[in-house]
Amino acid sequence: MYFPQYRPRRLRASETIRRMVRETTLSPDNFIYPMFVTHGKGVRKEISSMPGNYQQSIDNLVKDCEEVHGLGIPAVILFGIPEHKDELGTEAYSDQGIVQHAIKAIKNKLPDLLVITDVCMCEYTSHGHCGVIKNGHVQNDATLELLAKEALSHAKAGADMVAPSDMMDGRVGAIREALDDSGFADTPIMAYAAKYASGFYGPFREAAESTPQFGDRRSYQMDPANGREALREVELDIEEGADIVMVKPALSYLDIISRVKQEFDMPVAAYNVSGEYSMVKAAAMLGWIDGERVMMEILTSIRRAGADMILTYHAKEAAKLLNK
Ligand code: PBG
Image (cartoon, rainbow, N blue to C red; front, side, top):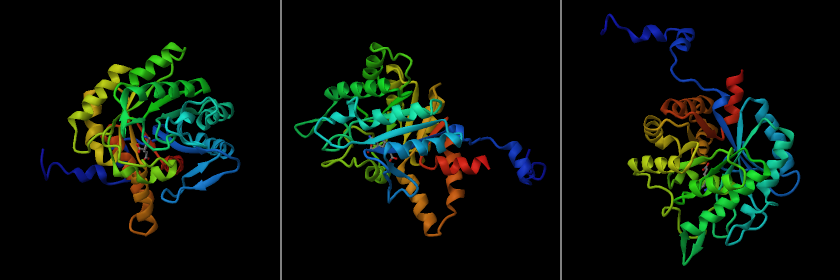
């Protein structure tokens, strides 16, 4: 059926009819809100390149979590800013670490808010890399032990889910084994499965104070030019026990989200990363785009590509609009 019999505009004539034929839904249920926790009391320091996002001490973090929960957002993901950094990132797996304390405080006040933790070394190491360094290189297998310890200490503190973001080979299997051996067989793993070496992480590194002090992350994070490799990475993580697989970043990688969704029968997460957020905020501040409209369009496009859940700094703002 072609024009003039078929007129696609008929089904676009009013908001009511558009609502009826809409293929993609967006709800606060789809969001995971990333948060940065730091030592101290009464701290709420805005991240200059990510307006509306903060480094917060636990007291303020918990208050913010109450708002998140009240908006109907089911989950947060925590990033820690340690008091001291060292070669082996010891605060990452210390039971007295900042994230471990934050998990307890949140779960104590808001047992229904799902607390996910980012499992990685880069925020905790003095060199800012995601693993152990020897002779100037990130050591894969030595790092696995530390990641397993970190994930386990998060689970012991009460984390509902752990999310390894380091991109070492074999880390999902190592973490799964460590959790299972210690009575945490029911703790799910959300794997940053296809994580690219991306310039879009720039603002996050200010937020988490995790910029590598030498070199870059290209020896462990993926080459932005590769698509087939992403499917192999996802397959490996599923084989090793991942419950949810993530593609990161989201916007320049919508094709990867779509391929992963088609290829694997698994829940798919996408990380709408810091640089993607900052670009929208900056352009909106200059009056060059309608920030709210672009935000909703971006989040919808990530869902349309196939993401079941979206980690996004827009979560609170978008939830407020959706709840109206
Ligand atoms: C830690 C980690 C990073 C992000 C999430 N976990 C930074 C990186 O890999 O350099 C980026 C998140 C964002 O940009 O919003 N490895």
